[in-house]
Amino acid sequence: MNKLLLFAVVVFSLSSCDLFTKKKNTAGPDDKQQMMDADRAFSKLSEEKGMKNAFLEYIDSNGVLLRPNQMPVLGADAIDYLIQQNDSSYTLKWAPQRGFVAQSGDLGYTYGLFQLQSKVKDTTIFGTYVSIWKKQSDGSWKFVLDSGNDGVGEPQ
Image (tube, rainbow, N blue to C red; front, side):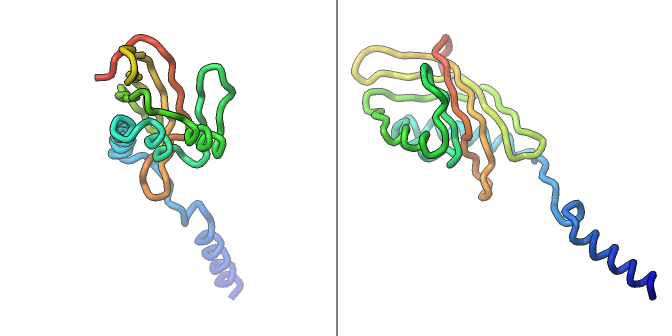
């Protein structure tokens, strides 16, 4: 009887253990493609509806913006910062060159080239960017960190 009771306790303990009940997350073959597609859709929305709308749509609630000559802008402050932006005088677009997804399948990054085109004067600024992405509970991707640098390059 004691052996049966011990066996029952061990089985119950193991069955409630995270090791046996939780499925381990691993990156699937489509995760990288979905993240890259999210970055492309993010750029397309920026071109069509403006940078502000696109960034507000794709930022994670804990997202961080790294901007020149500023301290990092975090979470709700980043969202407030974006809301205050006036993007009516320019169009921002970009193209991811590469992306990588962590083995866990829930974090990744893209980098590429951006183009900022003025609508009021004949000026275009080119540069590079990096975005770190987090897979959301619904399977979509939102960025958790965004940064860019002026420089040479033109999105394709």
